[in-house]
Image (cartoon, rainbow, N blue to C red; front, side, top):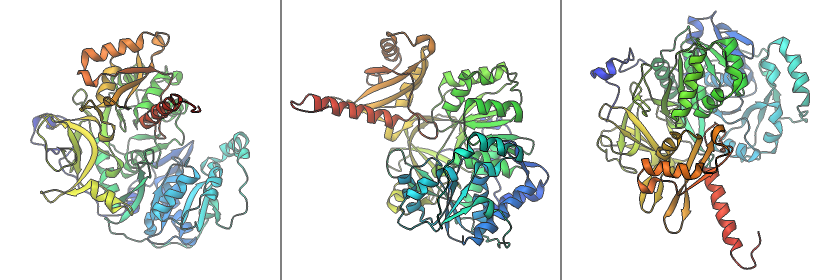
Length: 578
């Protein structure tokens, strides 16, 4: 087992990160208001040109709390927030915390059926979304009907000179909201209401609900306490040495802990300027990089890949950027090198650093130190975070360099899954040391110096002819080939082998018309991997499917293959129809 220890010289040389941190015993609202009192005149956020100082941010949060309280939101109530990264998405989080209510954050593009699931899981009777998504909430039929649906307009948060331009370009195309007694408007909520009293909740009480598992089945509501979020924000801010001079580019969604806590909340904790970007496109990010000059950014590998391949940032001065982290999915050497070269061409000197996290522990819990790490490593544990490798499904700790399940204990580990004690008991276990450990379901190993290496997800592990195959390992080998732009490896049901290894590859432009590439890649893997890990088949594609948070959606590829196999089976039966 390892944690961050200052008595090891190889760690001591990595800077001033302390072995343990002091965490305030407060709600996320009270923590925000501390920054408001310390840096009232500093810019807190910048949203498409609309800015607010920390004093104004505090006033906006209080007005939001007053308005929500006037609508009947009370301590213990659940408020579903279905918003892009924007002030209207962030203010209600802190306003709900002031009232002792709980924010449930979901994807703004959720379908009506998904909204039903989220409302049922959270037991939510209040919701907030954009007017353009009203119809989805109107169509949803949760078990407990919505009492209040607050609708915001994109233009509500825009500076005055941009509101008309937005209305002409998009706003006038938004369908008119029909008469609905549940609907209240954001502008009315933010108008003056009687001042609501602050509830001072226990730091260990529920603050927010985020969601996991929606792409593979019924989503699970992840219960995060005020302490979880406060501690996570402090750990992230300390690790990246975030301070009041920084400008944070928040281009990740706030329904995910990575975007909500690692970028927005951590930025607010340190009094930094947070530049919110509601929709990610390379062009929009390029515009922000040129005009707002962010010093720190974080994203998923596909974000960095898109930025590096787009022409928007070519020739841009990128010397402002001091830190860039990648998480949520495996980072290939090709993507890393391409992005670092882009920054270098722009006059900057940034290494794209990796990290590891999961929503069940808010966000990142392991990351590469700013001064660098080991090739292929996701880094070291954050302060006050214990990490060990156990035999999959057990509490038995494995020796150095053995591949097993990554288990985590620390102040950011969730309270549990809402209304799902069976699933909670499966992943939160009290070990012999008396600590509660989160069994992540992810496979990793630890070297003799305490650096961790991500191997893959246990659910993605392929059993081929009785042997374990780790898709992430095969994908990294494929990425080493000069003709590979992106790759995803999956296990396809096979009667003889149990599962056979198949790779889906997007070729680089220079290899798009090379029919022999598939055979080359199979040979390339056979030279570098043990026999049963080598793909039996390589399918070349123009693109790979992505999840809503920008990860490669391997489950979609598996579904395609299963459906293709079913169709082939039906076609082989006399009289079957296709």
